[in-house]
Length: 143
Image (cartoon, rainbow, N blue to C red):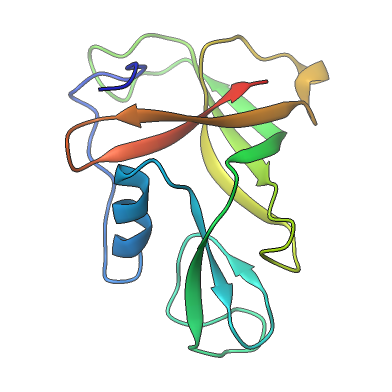
């Protein structure tokens, strides 16, 4: 098991038909972006059709897990009783070079450090949090 930043009482992520392959890859510590086979547009979260060209020809592709902090907020109200406060919800701009022809951002958490306004644009990399044998959540740490 990986390091834990959030308590066991946190609710599990919602999984549907379109996001299941993404969560299965995450359980193997692989970060993926859904890409349109028609126009190359990167999509997160996974969807049934491309938001650019409306194609349904979509493929999941591994990305490096590197990126930068796009924006964030610091949360002071717990979601779970055992949760340590404060925690950071962040938007990460993923490095999708060679995978997608657009900027792909995802919501996650910055863990292991406090965050300051000057950290916008700072390099981050994925840090996997195994919530169980089946559920692994990508968090991010500063490089």
